Length: 381
Image 1 (tube, one colour):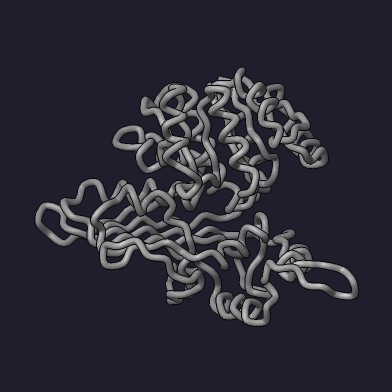
Image 2 (tube, rainbow, N blue to C red):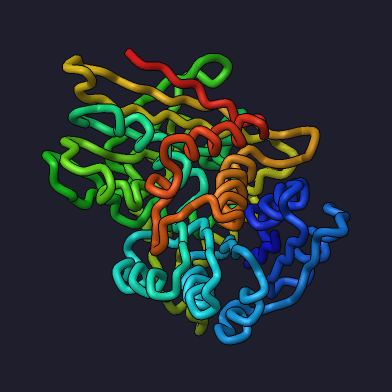
């Protein structure tokens, strides 16, 4: 199997390292416009399977040519670039898995284009959305009636430290976008938009984590369409206590505004300035991170009220020097690409992860995660 990855940042590099360890993958080519990132990846992962090449994904025609010789492509790009890779995959008639591309990006036309060309594109297939969707659907399917779906997930440093009790494990701009974009949830069986950072509540995990907080963010993605007739459904981001209030202070002070202001004859957007200043100060550095996940689904099963909970606490991998957030985001994407590239997913079109991985294939998917040390506990009451 030949795989093309677009983007060599933290997630793209981790996906590449996982793929070269797979027996069914014979070649992995990583494309990026950043030469330094590509060199760093090549130095760290010295494998005969790995190739790195400079490429601008915005050159759609060239991107399509690169994809034509591959069994599957992967998008590990910033939000503003993911669409270029998706459309190039359609032009090339190549199956594709993307970490970001969501349900709000003209899904109808893309679904039709994929079917006409006989290909499958799996969007938003990382940790959340992605794995969380698969788990929510796994718990929902056996129920005669689903009443509530609550997803809580987040990556945090092992110990809370100022400023913001948070450390960056990927793009800070993407983190800020989560805090500013309205969250789509389900209330009273209707899809509604609520402010991000609202719905603040306390959540507890077993020691040594203990007390955390969580708040609404826009992470349900395709679930608002694929799990139907549910009374309540939402996704919340987990952080150490006090983080939401600190972010609200930045918002209230106008420091996260995207509209440029004039300062000493220069034009600059406050959000861009704050992001640049804080990115270095909030970088994880030598600290270790932990990823927390809890998916709870309740409803009627065999005539009885049932609650199914999935829970995961994943830690930094010291052996491979890999952050937990990189592991838990990259591994679902890598596994999805391998199953798709080997012809294991027969459905064609724009297929969300919760519909791509069902029944035995879903169990196989979760087994592959367990082999990589991602231990997900399941409990039904």
